[in-house]
Structure formats: C-alpha cells, structure tokens
Image 1 (cartoon, helix red, strand yellow):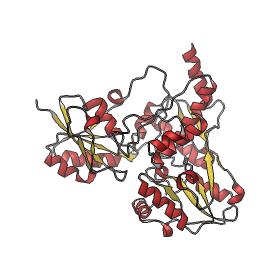
Image 2 (cartoon, helix red, strand yellow):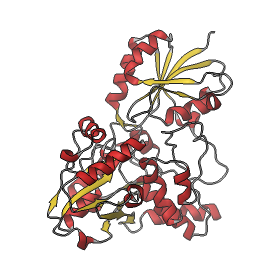
Image 3 (cartoon, rainbow, N blue to C red):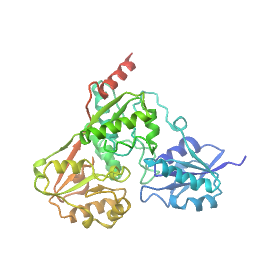
Image 4 (cartoon, rainbow, N blue to C red):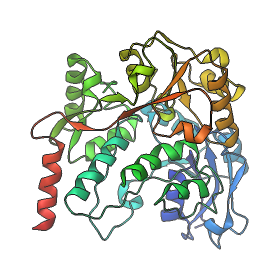
Length: 398
C-alpha cells in the first residue's frame, strides 16, 4: 500500500507533538503539510528538517488553514488530522466536512497514542476552556506538593512561536532563561509566576468544546473555579453542566480572589486595564480579573483602549469583537510587544491595571505607572481540592 499522505491542522503546538510521537518515524505515513490558525505569524514557515528527521530532509511546510482545499488537491492528501484546542464541536465538524468533500479521511488522535510516558507520578491540570484558571491551580499544586516534601517540576504544552529548532528543548529555572529564549508575552504569562514562586464565568461550556469535553469526561477530580466572581445561580448551572458530562468524579469549588498591589493608586483615576491575552481571545471572555479589580477599587473611568490602539492591536480587536473596554496582553512577536507598549502610552489613562501574569513594567520599560492585579487559587469547600491531593500523596507513600 502507498503511504498515507497527511495534513496536520494545528496552531503551533499540538500538531508538532502529534507528528513527533505518531508520524515522524512511521514509513506508512508522509506528512505533506501543517496548517496554522489562531496564532499570528506561524504560517508560511517550515517545520525544520532538524526536528522532522531524516525522512524529511527539506522539512515540512506550514501553510494557512484557509488553503486546506488547495493543499489537499495539490498534495493528493488522503488523511487530515485535527490538532488544536478550545474550539466548538461545530468548528471541528465544519473542518471535517471540508476534508470529507475532498475525499480524504478526517481524524482525531486519542490520548493513548499521544500521551508521553512518565517514570514518576504526574498530576494533569486541564480545563474545558481557556481562562478557567489552570495556571493558578498548577501554581497552587506545585506549592502544596513542595510543602509535602516533594521535588516538583512543572511541564506544560510547548508554545513554539519563534525559532522552532532553537526551541526543541526548553528549561526555565531563573528569569534570565526567559530572556535568553526570547519568550513571547504568552510564554511569560505561563512561566514567570512559577519562577517568582519557586515553582466560572461560562457555566454552560462544560460541553460543546474540543477537547474540553473530552478532558472533563476523563477527570478524576473536577474544580468549578472562580466561584467568587460568579452568581450562585451561575455556579449551580456550572455544576449541573459538569454532572451531565461526568457524574462520578468528586467535585469541589475554588476561588481566584483578585488583589491589587496598590489599590489606592487606582481609586478615582482614569484606568487602562490590561488582561491575560488568551483568556479574552481564545477564551471568548469580554473582560477578566483586571476589570473586576479596577472597578472594585473605585476607578473613576475604565479607559477604552481601542481609540489609541496601534495597528497590530486594532487587528486583534477586529478579529475578536466580543472584547470589551480592556486591552489583551498580546505579544507573539516583537512587533506586537511594541504595539502593546505604544497603545498603553497613547491611551488617555492615568494608571494601568495589569492582570496579566507578566511583569509588564519590566517587559515594556518606563512609561505609565502600572499596578498589578494578582490572583491565586483558594479552596472554597471543606474538604476541598487540598484533601484530594493529600489523599493521593498518602497513596503514593503507602
């Protein structure tokens, strides 16, 4: 049989992983292209031969997802594999329809074929949507496990937005490692808080999103998070939605209380709010923790960033029209970081409230005063998540 001719649909992450663990050394498969979406600046590059291996001496092209039909016909594609996240089931099946219309197979790779094996215990933190609070819970877990005398390493999905060959293996132990790796704002949002520490507002979204519904069905413990920022009715709806999908896993409630470093600098002032980028864009939230904190601190005006937005940020607002009067911390490239800095400086604001985990003052340099909004996970129930973690540790010790 001739080898399968495969396209991997991705967003600079899971598709590369799937290639490495499933297709890279499989003589029955030839990956003719990756496609890119969601993340700007990824398409029109190549997955380098140094990573693709000896079967791909010229590397593998990365093309725009919009060109899927052209790629399929040109490359005589026989199978298309979907490999990115936080999209509706309808989105996935619309792509499937486009693929089937080409005469090709459409596939989702399962956990058994793609999970990495580990020789030590692993706690996996997943979520039904972007912005549910995975990162604060991961930080909380790392602290809890260290307090129990465990040596902890945090491993997360790669964000290979830059030089793929240079990013083939990355380890961050000190802040200087972030500088040396030329990390994007999105990478810093994940890594900086761990280095500093040494380690539900969408109640119906428990189902209907890929792969969120799948990971919910697999969960051993479910956390309904951010209950401090939701109504009792909303929390109840979230719990009902969880139970329709996973009726057996223990369920606990968690909170992410937001605290401003210097709330007095916000009261009565004109405030520009900078929020965690992916929470607003891929997570479909109109605002986040920064808006809540600035409003609670008595900001006189929440300044709309759109009139002052640099062109690169205007494109983001156009692409995600649901975003409200807040500025997403977008910085997938140096040009976007500069656009973020210019937008902040050109805004009609006295002070900036930054709810991104990134230290914006350090990243952007001198400019408008910045007050950081910080949020960390807290148990609400007794027993809560801590009890489940402690019980799991007791099983390891036994």
